[in-house]
Length: 463
Image 1 (cartoon, one colour):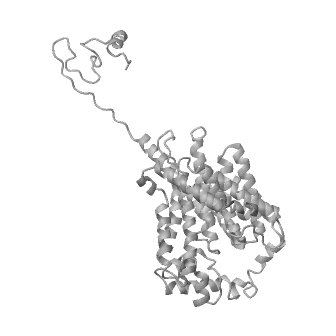
Image 2: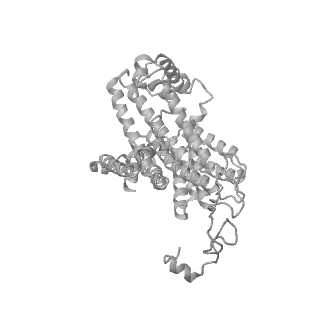
Image 3: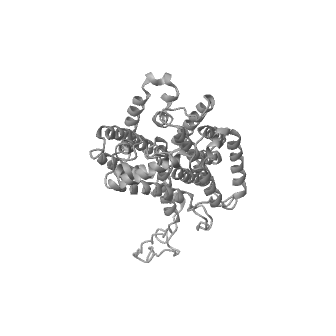
């Protein structure tokens, strides 16, 4: 438990950047040492094949391998090696959190992430100034906006599924994250939030309460946003005024340059984390990142890495669909009702297991978080962001619990065929001759039913 919270505070929340007074404590080294020790102990209790079958693990390790292979062929090997070290740390935290969270299905990790979002958004509200706000050297304004958009549905699901204390904390964290998101003035973050809201409306069967909740969230967002935020949207229709369209350093030019470099280096790319140096030397001359994760992955690590990355996203979506699907043995008829894989199924009153309902709500939160992430990364470079890999660790832990429940459901639904009783041939007229299952002599001794006293004498254990 301590290792999960410490790794999350160091990797996800960046606690030393929020509170510089903690820097002398070297919490990063302490977190990695404790995380490594706890990971070794946790893995020792599980057989190696089971650890290897941890959901998402193989795809993440394959991405790590492709990142390593891109280093020797990078445009700047020293920079690529440094970037790879950062990627390796991110993957280590993912593996540690995923393995350590197997036992409780990600409950402790979910709480740690909720605390992290609360700290990040709370510090933004406390240190509110002018312009686009951010509170960490790791996360810029766009990164924070995507982080908040991604974890808002996770917090909302916990606000519906957790205990009352956790519900209050989750809704409070969601409200702070929503207000803090307006302070980032991120247009990409707002687009991700809007697409996620549209997905919710189209997928849900209970649209009226959902629309009411979305209208409330939209009202809070609109009331909290400054006029400068909406001014950023006013220039979208003017191609000359929008730097993303007209400037050499805008996103459109960066995307064109990235696609050209991807086609020139389709196998192993220009090196992990080396889009900016490659674009400066061989692109349009701007020392900037891709501002698009899909182009970033393909340009830096090759087209094979893009395929693996997209398959990772698709696997998360499929796991979420399985978790949302009402394949539970608790249904009275034994056959789950037909429902959409996206919407929360409506079970008859008294027939829905509260634990199953809570899990489905949490999987819905994951599905909508994935929608926000897949939309938001069209505008930022977040291939190996710690926030996304912490979400992946949570998904991996939840998937372990999901597979256990599905296995138990399969066993429970399997028809049990009673083993046939043996055909015993008796000896003599008074014996239990030709005893067959269901006959009046079955379970008797010498043709007579044993009394309790007789049974106790011959079987003192009472069996």
